[in-house]
Image (cartoon, rainbow, N blue to C red; front, side):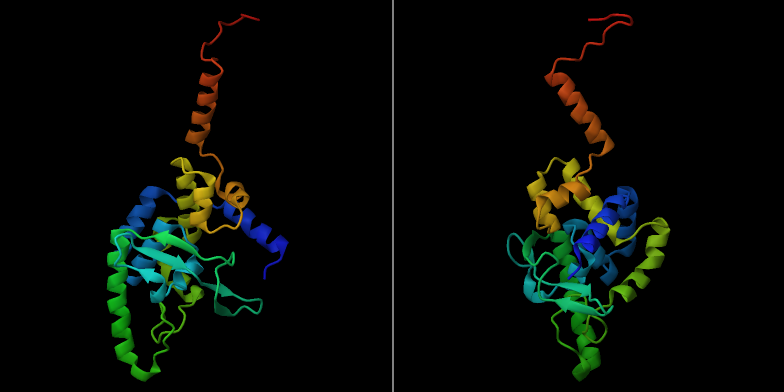
Length: 232
């Protein structure tokens, strides 16, 4: 398990990460289309999940056919103290959470299921059945390092500092900007404490900051601007 200092360091890094440019993010998603990379990107963009959680997604955790489709996040792909990637039985916080899935993402996941079925047929008995939605070519975990390498040229077209963290940071920040309560954003982000969500992602956007100040100005009836030289 990461030490308190390590967790705090990651939190500080997330707080310093610039939120994704929405126009560029939309262009990137459109460019990736319905491919496997595009499906992972769409999942992360619409649920603000961690990359490891997306790569650890299993078919048994998905309900794509209900009136309100969902994904129960139960495991994550992480790196242990020896630098080895492994699937954890729980998420980073040790708690599972349920996230809603949009019709577009559901359609993309169904297409991904067909791709996985073809991959399985191709390798036959060499397939490792881990029930992963985004497996390697033989059914094992899709290494985050390999995944990141494959995405690198696509992110390079968006900007030199862009990566998956911007999708998560940008998504959670936009939820705050849209007026969602901290407890709601915390549940989507999978934080064990609401204070973590507030500290890392609850920074007021410039336009929200101005709106907050203007609201307080109205509350205290300080909208009239005194003439220069006028004193109390």
